[in-house]
Image (cartoon, rainbow, N blue to C red; front, top):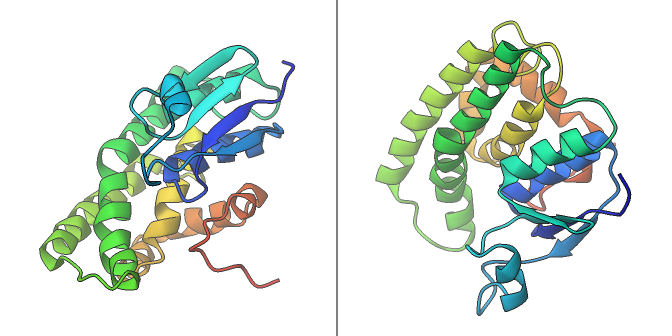
Length: 219
């Protein structure tokens, strides 16, 4: 493949980071084009021609355009050289996709919006935490962590013995979740996931794509 891919989005976004992690793990040089959907006036008309729903990220490689993070990461894995990020076997690949679906459908809302935003971001903005929403999110997060522990089995990665898109999909959600006191405490109650996170957090791709809210690791 020739041509430098372009990824459109903001560095604070979970889903932009997922795409950036895939590009980094494949060793694909790319351009990050800033797009903030929450900026005054919203996304530009040019961006809406790339992504009609105004969400991030969007992606462009040569004359090919994509949106939806799952489509982007699978394309990156299949279109570029580098270590494969999807299991080869049908059952292992199904498990990888199941974990990605779980992260999208259940974990993202609970871990990021329900726990991190309520317990960290809102107080930082001088807003009150919605205790009922936080309690609901904590219960859902616990269910998610238990389900992920069950699905990953012996690991050491979420979908088996090798790093996959499942790991890259969940990691940015956990990165925010662990910044909340309850999130960090909950992760410690699931030793297999805590060990997975230690392995994941140590990868160079995670340092390269670090959220501004995350502490800089000690050198």
